[in-house]
Image 1 (spheres, rainbow, N blue to C red):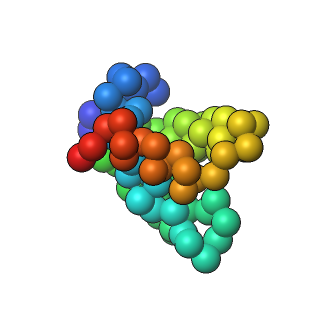
Image 2: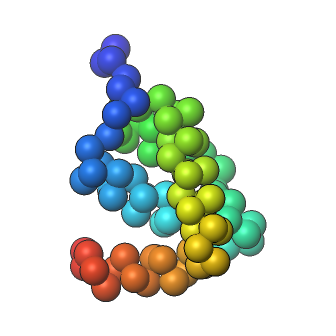
Length: 82
């Protein structure tokens, strides 16, 4: 079994952010679809709690700046086209 790390590179954080944003459950404000955290953890071979901490930090940062996920996602697409 591969060793799980809790450190992500900047590129991995960006990819993690994109995966999580794609897993937002529209019916649940700021909530993720069931299994989203485990999916991202498995993809990056990190522990699920690392993804939880990452997601919580994102939610707090967005809330503290009075932004919405939609506005942040739109800005992210403009500055980093897929």
